[in-house]
Structure formats: structure tokens, C-alpha cells
Image 1 (cartoon, rainbow, N blue to C red):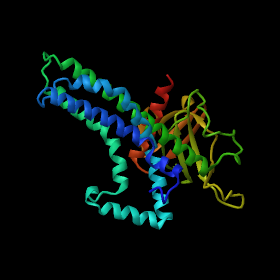
Image 2 (cartoon, rainbow, N blue to C red; image 1 turned 60 degrees about the vertical axis):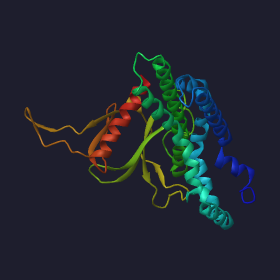
Image 3 (tube, rainbow, N blue to C red; image 1 turned 135 degrees about the horizontal axis):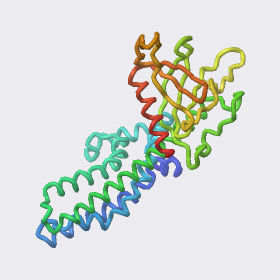
Length: 304
């Protein structure tokens, strides 16, 4: 592929795949040697996995890069017809089993999960009194930690991508509210993260809005229209950013007549309460409304 792509593009698409290859060669080599020593029965698989667990951290880099790699590969395929033709010919090679390059690039992301499944199956069939039980248990714990770190790395990259997309879509500089550096640190310290977004509307007027929940604040934006629209952005701020620690999300209270409640709680309507201010919003569905409650609560818990 080097005749079609620059070294920078190749590094972006394949990332540290050579590290992935090397660590799996070492694991396979050790397991193969253990088979030969024990007449094709591996009796110390827990210890063998523990030996290489630290090296599996390289998956965090590879998996975290996959979103960017996929976009770059797709872009280059559309820009360079010769590359697309080359990849189609490769796909027809019997050794590729009709799989496209994109499919091969995804396979390393599934490897850690397969290791965990394998180890848990072995543990399931290993009696607690067996001498290898504690070793396999330890291997499962280490594999779970590696998978967790890989997931954190992937989520961090995806979160950054989402924040960059928000920065490209929302006109923060042209707002009358406080200026927001969306890619800057959280108001509570540490990096800012993305959690959720959806279309919304004002409950009474039906005014169309769009909302984002980040790890430290809620953003309510509105489509840019009219003479003062900045053509570079799709949205402008509707309301000043609301810190998640200062906000309460609640159902719309029922009306009271005397001592009785009348009416019912709308499945899609909810309120954001900040001090004395109440913003009543309508979500597209009850499920979306519940996600607003859930993600807001998780953001608040992370602050405690």
C-alpha cells in the first residue's frame, strides 16, 4: 500500500499493529512450547497469560486509534481509485477469505475479549481445589483489567472526537454567554468528557433545541437562523452552560388542586432546575428522556 499512501497515512491506519503482532507471537510461542513439554496438554496456562499481561497494554493504543484509522482509510479509498482497486484485488485473494482490509483491522480489537472468554471458560471447568485454580483466577483478573484500560482508552478518544465535533458545530465565540473552551479542562478539574446528546424542544413553544451532556456541564444550543447567522456553524448557544453539579433534572410536577394532584407526568417532558431557574424541555421519546436522567446522574456521581 506504500505506493498509494504516505507513511503518515499508513501509521494512522495501522497504528502499532506490529506491537500487536509481536506480543501475540510471544504468547503463541510460549503456549506452543508448553504443549510440547507436556505432551500437548498445557497445565500452566494461567501463569503463561500472566507473563504477557503487561505487554497486552499495547492494545489500548491500537483500539483507541481505530476510529481515526477507519475514517482515514475510507477517505483515502474515495480519493484514490487505484487504492480502492488494489484493496478489491487483495480481497479476492483466497488467503483473505473474501474479507476486506477494514475487517482485518477490526480483528485485534476482538482479541482481548477472546482471551477473557477463553480464560473464564478454563476457570469454569477448573475445580477450586486444583493447583492451577488460583493462577487462572489471577489471569482472569489481569485480563479484565487490561480490557478495562483498553475500553477507557477507546472512550477517551471517542469522547475527544465528539468534543471536536461540537466545537465545529456550535458558535461559542459569538455567544453573549461566558466563553467556552470546549476542548479545555473540566470545570471540576481533569479532562472534559462527552456523555450524551439528543434533539430537544421547549415544552410550551415547541422551539427546537439540541442538548449535550458533558462530564461537567449541560449545553443547550439552537439552530442558527436569520440575518445574523454565522454560516460556519450549525448552532449557537441557547442558554449559558449549566454545570452538572448545580443542576437538578426532574419530572414536571403534577398540578395541585387543593390537596389533590391532577394530571399526569408526561413521559417525554422534564425540567432542568438551576437555583430559581426552571427550563422545561421535551425529549423525542421516553427512552431519550430517561437517558438524560441517567447520564446526568452518572456525571454528578463522578463529582462526589
